[in-house]
Image 1 (cartoon, rainbow, N blue to C red):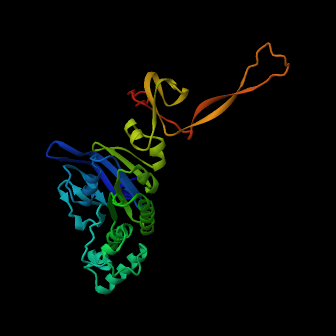
Image 2: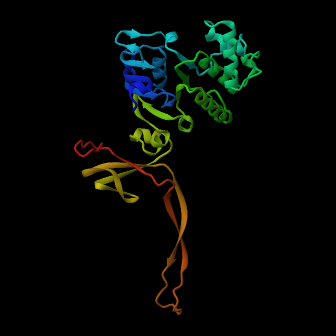
Image 3: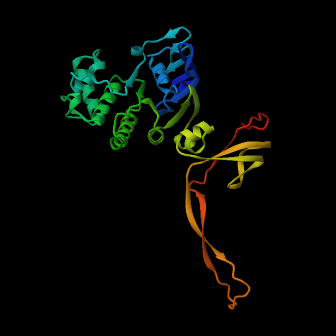
Length: 334
């Protein structure tokens, strides 16, 4: 992706195992450009939360290196503690202090500042997240979405280089979740902060992220723009996880592939017969009318058309992704 100098977060060959057997993260490399909102997307147990904790410094990898804002923080004998990494983190349960007011929760990481500067910073954060006038309330007096914004304001208060969010919307109901994630995206974009958030919700990742990184079994399978990941999945595993897909097998012959839908052009040329699959995202069924032939015994000299209904399967989007499952390095297949 981008070079190290343009990346605020850079992971290189990061691996993490638990108990010597459980493989949480395996040789993961990732670059996150400045100001980017990246979604780590994958099923439960795929290693995405472990990756987030490795970036935060809450876990130590078995191997690999991590750079944050061009500073080497992990690897080759280096392990910078979490509090020295300039990382703000929003946990799944928000982790607000119930005995502190909203203002005091936001001010918690600002104890190193003089009182006047601390009050000014809290006021700026309250304005950023749209909670002016609620600074004297306690967390239990706010809605779930408002508590989420308080947690985000606290994470942003110390001006971090990176903000990390672990399943930030999972505790909200469906209607509030949509509203809150749009609000959170707007806040992060206004702040210009580089952000990584973990989710297993495909709609969530595709709707608010600038980049989507798909994980499974501890491996990073694909990184790209949401539209590209959706329409051009790099593997069958990505195609079936990121949205619904109709998987259609086919046989490739050079630059064409034959399947139940007919003969189509291949994405890459392959010599010989190869197994291909197509990931077609959506179909619609529409009726078509066709003329029925008139028998030769008809009295009329004029051709008569009788409507005959048929159902035609039409892809809603024209782009259909095909991938070769064989391995022909000489031809670029695979």
